[in-house]
Structure formats: C-alpha cells, structure tokens
Image 1: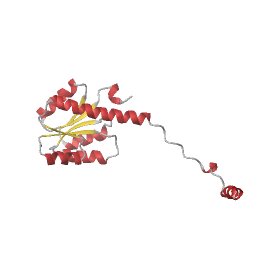
Image 2: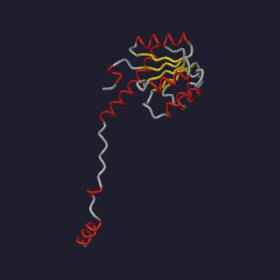
Image 3: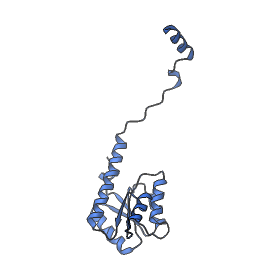
Image 4: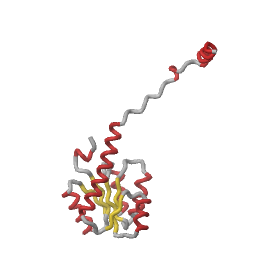
Length: 165
C-alpha cells in the first residue's frame, strides 16, 4: 500500500514569508497533510535529502539561498525518490510559468491563489505519486539472468547444423 494511504503525507513547504507559510501550513493540516517547512532554499534542500518520505513540495520561486527554480532542477537530477513539485509564486507571466515547468516544476500556481486550487493540485500530485508507487510494487521482478552452463557448447551447435543439412 502506498505510504500516503497509511499516514499523513509529508509536504515540503519552502516559503520565506512567515505569514504565507503559516497560512499554507494551516490549510495543509486541515486537509490531512503534514507540513515540513523551510524558510530558505538551503534548508528545503537539506530537508528533502534527509527525509525521503517527502513526495510533495510547494516551493516559492524567490527563496533566500537556493532559489525555487534551482531547487526544482536539483530535484530532477538527484537519484532519490520522485517529488511532485508545485512552484508557488507571485510571478505570473507566461514566460516565467514556462521557465518553472521547464526547470523541473510539475505544476505552477500564482499566489495568492484560492485554497481550493492548491488543494486540487496537491490531490493531483498525490494521485500521481500513489499510482507510481502502486505500479512499482505490482511490477514483476526482473528475470534472473541465465548462467553459462545452460548454453550449448559450440561443437554441439555445429553437429546440429550438419545434421540438418
């Protein structure tokens, strides 16, 4: 069974504005998530590296230290578990949205946003992560490679070819 069905899913919240961070934390708790918060990009990266159970992230673009874009880029190049990343930013130009998505974000929300929009986007991320985990768990084990002792000796192959001729 996928981890998010067993306990409250962990959500990294990387937001430097304490008022916004507290408001989003309150909504996450109300919706059944557990917020793991960071007020800068360096702390966010540290939390991601230390806590593999974090599979969802809400990331502000303009973080002190590592920026939100740099955080997304690092997420996409690391070998750890996949994290569904929502870029949460006051930036609203089409080019900036594309830059975030091309930079590794899975989704983009302009803040301020309606809480229901954030909740829906988290739901999408959770479904994707849960489905990926379910597929991985139900995938057949890779076949065991055959050993050399099961392969015919070359001279046997020659005899078979001669007998057929």
